[in-house]
Amino acid sequence: MKLIILDRDGVINIDSDAFVKSPEEWIPIPGSLEAIARLNHAGYRVVVATNQSGIVRGLFDLETLNLIHRKMHRMVQEVGGLIDAVFFCPDVDEANPYRKPNPGMLLEIGRRLKCGLQGVPVVGDDVRDIRAARAANARPLLVRTGKGVRTLEREWGICANVQIFDDLAAAASYLTACND
Image 1 (cartoon, helix red, strand yellow):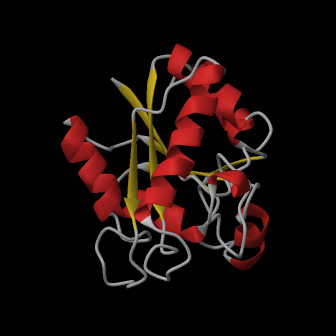
Image 2: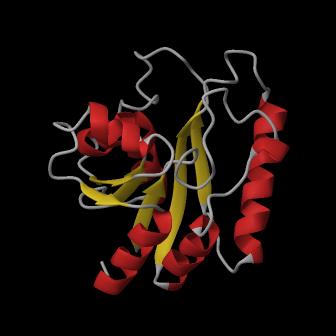
């Protein structure tokens, strides 16, 4: 089984410093949904791992998060793709082992899917994604969408030895061409 783990905000959809709080605010980045479909067709199982502290902050509730994810699943399916699962951490506490940059959410994905994470691509736009991937012994990939450019500017040292792509579509093209 080939697995890829994607962050949500800034990788699949347009990010917002004010949080994505409703299905109406969830807008896919051009080409991201088709990229997921291409990954599926190349044999990848696609799983999303996302921090969603807006729940604990009172900006939206679990029902709204489910509606956002329902929209995401539907739009991916409309272009011929599938997201196998969405894992999220609603906490703001950095000590929570499941909140990225901690690896707990990624390790839980590996446990649930009964697979090791060695070399599994984890696509993110933030230093938290890179740190979580490294801590889980996965393979961090950074996109310039979302917080990606800011991450490269502020955290260049942490980005060393991380493959960098313009967006999820470019990362998917690379991975499917490599037949990784």
